[in-house]
Image (cartoon, rainbow, N blue to C red):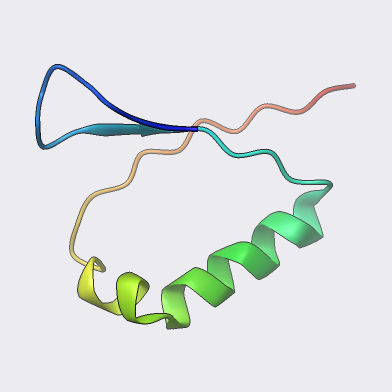
Length: 52
């Protein structure tokens, strides 16, 4: 899910990954993409939760 917050410069993004390896692969893939390179200077704050 991607949603804009009340602050037009802040977005809320929720993603679900099968496991830590899937998340790590996603992070590497995004960082190597045009989007990842263009937005590299934008702060990201992660909250990672795991179902047990």
